[in-house]
Image (cartoon, rainbow, N blue to C red; front, top):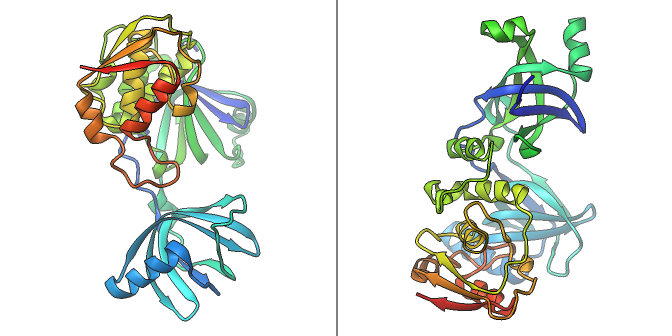
Length: 341
């Protein structure tokens, strides 16, 4: 198949190469939330304060919560405390709990029990159709035998003309297939594959445009990343990282257009372009700003007031985005003189 755009895989084994996809690009479902009981728990520290607030106001934000039981430490995200009854604290959190190394700030409890019912699969998953697919390996065997057995969990990769552009889906599975429509595909014996996908793994529609833009050569027009909504600029960074070699920029004066720097991803897009040109990638984390830069490197940050207003306004929780001040300090520690214009 010439220039397939998608590959379906089971582990490292390619099951099919596909020409296109239908149904993958839609607004993802919001993170699922569920109610939990922390049984045999004596609240302390921030949790004790949140419990007190919840008793008075009916609910209280907690953010991240580490719970230690006999099974180990679990991390709950986006927690709201709903109340307490005896030694049972009721909370609502994003699911599922994440396993965590033991931490001294974990709250000791006898059990962590989910009390919300599990949602049915038809509410949490949707069908996506991979079009014009050439089956291989185990999938080809299943198709030719006509048997009910299908390969287990699958993932997809979005291919580029050279290499992989993106990957995704957790625990998706192939549920059926049919001959592809269209004379050319039918003559080639290609199939349309139906894949059941978690709704949280759908991609915003703008991501399809980003992937298509990066399908061939690296974008050449300055500021192209700014055309896309701020919530999808992480997909732009992913493409830039996969395509860039991250050379050490020579000592010089560079100009960063801060007009659209409204969040961390926007800053990294603008920084890569400032130093390496359109589609450039320099870093996407403060820890990656370590070359250091050559002496005499200056970054002129235009319209810095936008970032000063927008960055760092989220709660100071673990794994939070960097603040404007932290970015400026990190650049300075890497040998960059930052000037504002």
